[in-house]
Amino acid sequence: MDIWLFLLVLAAVIIGWLLGRWQPFKKKKDEFHHDQFSERYARGLNYLLADDSDNAIKIFTDLIEVNRDTIEIHIALGNLFRSKGEVDRAIKVHQNLLARPNLTRRQRHMAIAELASDYLKAGLLDRAEKLYREMIDLDADAIHAYRRLLDLYITEKSWEEAVECARVLYQKGEPEAAVTYSQCLCEAASEAINAGNKRLARKNLDLALEVDPACVRAALLLIRLNLDSDNPSAAKRIFQRLTRESPQYMPLYIEPARQIYLGREISTYQEFLQNQYQKHPSTRLAIALLEHYARNDEIEKARQFLSDILHKSPSFEAFEFALRFLKSNPDQLGETWATLSTFLKSLQDKKNEYSCSRCGYESHAIQWLCPSCRNWASMKPVRS
Image: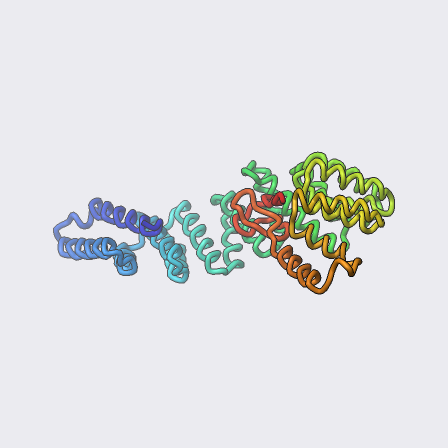
């Protein structure tokens, strides 16, 4: 049974219970109306049992007069409309409730929260935002409101507002709020970098690492910021800590390593690739090392290392490099090899290199916010 159908059954039971307790129906002068009421209630139950939820909902909605004793039932019916995708009807139900002057403080807060959810489901984000802000001002389940606002701002990529909501949740001790807060700060820092505001970017990144010292993304952005500011020694210190404490992201460190070492410490860059390949062998590191050998005319080293890779851990990337590497010798390669190279490269482009540790979502590129389960920093490189 679907959850909305279960809730409808529960609402029907509550309605029946209210019928038994409603004092006006116990008076003889109202017996005729009571009989009509009971008959319509029974008909609603029959529709429900016949899996005709539309007619059942219509009867139960018309049956119950809106008053303090039935507010929760109307809220439940509005939620059923929303769960079925009938958002317009849900909005009307909840708007009608909010227009009532006799609601208790708790009931009004409930109606506001449900109407905000209706607007969110309908894509009316500005209206939903306004109601969640009202909930915060009224101190009506403010934590729930901040959670929903955070998700709304992330969807809209409004990172300044998202940072503020994440900060509040972090200070309230919400589970996993540190990761979310640091990732939102990284988003704000990226915007600041693109806008040329390096001071603001650095401030956000320093705070991100203070909140979540294991934030790989913040460290990578700080490395980029220091390199752009011609401060390679600071970038190198962060880089060394990063490779030591979070080696599982090694494929992401190859480009920063190249920028830090090449032109200054070429031999150190080669040693870095060799050492990391021994500790954490991967196709990305292998190809980077092969490219380095080829660029520095260490042809024999490249041939030997390539031969080892193709025998021990063959991959599309290794074969594609082999075709490019051997192309300089026309006696060994022809048009067929060039066609095969294009084919292998197209397969490489389709390969998923990152996987979400929470839900298993796969992607060719790193995505710090998983688009499937919406967890931050849950994407990990797939070992190959």
